[in-house]
Amino acid sequence: MYFQGSTGSIKDVQSNGIGKGMKAGIQLAAADDSAGLEARDFKIEMKKNTTTSRMLIWDFAAEDGDVVTVKVDGNILQANITIMHSPVALDIPIPSAVEIIGVKDGGGGITYGVKFPGAVQNNAYFNAAPVGSSNVYTITGQ
Image (tube, rainbow, N blue to C red):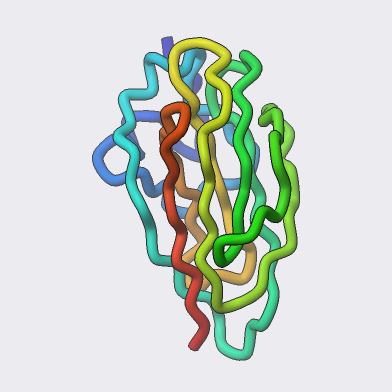
């Protein structure tokens, strides 16, 4: 069972984790185990003269109690975030390395979406982070 709308579907992001032009908070799957995503790292280029940005993180599948910790350049920015459909906004410096660590799996895997307003590409990124593993987003400036 998939949620689909004019802004995309889970099938659009399964091959590379990138949702071109998708909005933060989009829900793509009814359950985590139906997402079919592999854990991956991304490099995100921000628009010229950007020194800070927001990172929006949300659960794009079931709100089942998934928990993540976010580190920036090796330091904990926010620990134990229970991700929900409504995006959580975190301020990050540019450039930086943002690491999202899987802490607790509410069932079916930890799946989440992130978006960086101010990025050159207006994409959302969809990922999986098994408990104890992480994904790194290398955020660069121009």
